[in-house]
Image (cartoon, rainbow, N blue to C red; front, side, top):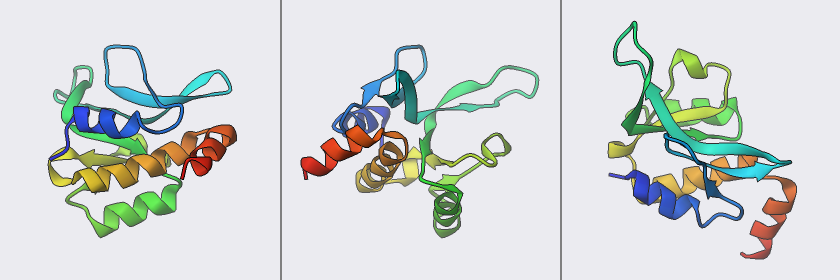
Length: 128
């Protein structure tokens, strides 16, 4: 099982990655002066007529495109899923109890790559 602390530890090793301020869990990279998230808290609708609340059991992670999203969900539906709110958006919802640290590491790197600016990606390649 992966925790938010595990996600922080992995994500914050990526160039330019910072934990976004605020009440909810989110990590992103600054791109052209704006923060672009690549992993964030999933807001679950617990009660139909009340606001969504952050889930400790699921996070949303950005992926490169909708084809990758579909591939992940279809290959391992016990780990990855989506909901109507994310239709047409390249992000998967991840059940933390079902993924390993290695799974999360690979997914976070994909998410970072999808949002990082070209200079950050060049820096990443130079450190390999």
